[in-house]
Length: 546
Image (tube, rainbow, N blue to C red; front, side):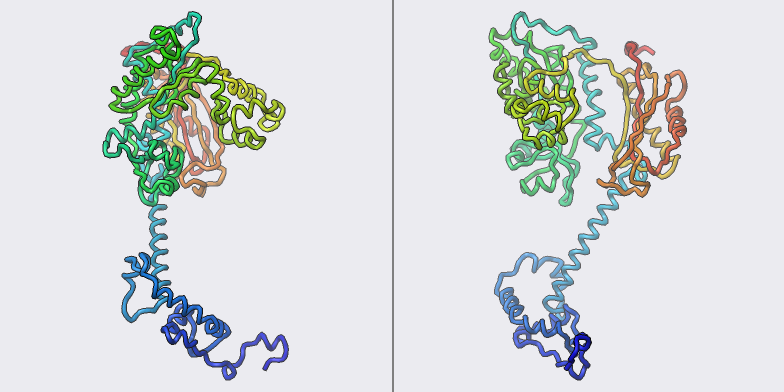
């Protein structure tokens, strides 16, 4: 028997070690081989761990007895386990461990396949990436197609110049805010009527392991807490019956042109906001319809909503009306879904006071969080908070002045309804942009340049080009290619450069290649590129003339 601490730490000689005898409960249920196999215990020897197993063996036996009495679960008879349950093989725990390893291996292989697929969707691995980026990316569609859609609307209605706004004649001005309800989702429902009445969400991918971002969803899905901007996996946890629909950008463009044409047919005073949203000054129509602004706005709004519904084949639109664009947008929130709401100046300001502070122009996520840190959550909270305290939280006198004006219902920006002259046309890509060498970088720049030229020619502004602009995303994380978000651009320095160029100077593609070469960039470190054609302020020549 050891007498000192040093001797106690030494293992006992084999002749002094008692041979391991399994507990009688283990022998009763045949578990001695299972535990020995799963824990890799040599049954011919013993150790302290063996004594611990024997000490706690009764509880293991009781657990095994309960498992036998419990009805078999789905996991116990899953195909993976059943495929490996061969008579004469491992018992109990060892067999379960082997099945668990197999399931984990399947998950690892699935993740590896997903990573390989994600790696292939870059400009470095897919030569057609830029050609398909605009047709598969929601953000590229919204950013690049808005101007083209509205240009087609104005060209179809032959409205090159906006006339002066109608006079008020001593009454309130009435502005409509027209917003299509769940636009992408409703276009999907019209293409597949069986989806009507179901919770539908539009996103890029619908696979069981996909976690793409939802861009639009029906009000049936919103009842479960699903909303635009939510990840698909979270949405499915909230709404297990959620049905997903893919993007159809051509259908969106066609429906948007028909909807906006209805607005432009009613009034020439239209201000474009996005592909599914616009403002319209209908003061003269409301005054002609009724002596009451509220009744006249209701008549004109119902007529316009009916025309949009018929023109698009069933896409509903909500309309809010008030004396300004800011208050009309507040009325639209109260009109949704598929309705109309008119707010008088007094009602509009009282409703605005109850709106969250991020409903004001210029308030994003970071600004909202700073305001919430000082207890400002609604517009009324903002008006009750001193300017000094808000300035300490935000800083910037101009932003604070605009926020207080908006919270009082006063639009800080002067409403301009005349069509502003276009200043540039371009194409860019900052997602999945990877290049290995200067040659590949130049080829990608050439593709983006051709896309910009095609858009300029469609808009009849290519002869007005006076400069070439480049916007380059250069990574801060080195050239390893790893960045947060997969194939996104990650942390970058954004460089903007311009150079004089006119169509008479030669090929624009070669000019862009030379421009990029003079910048002396490191191609593997570039995470995005934008090519813009900057226009002159002079009017463009008539269509069909050089």
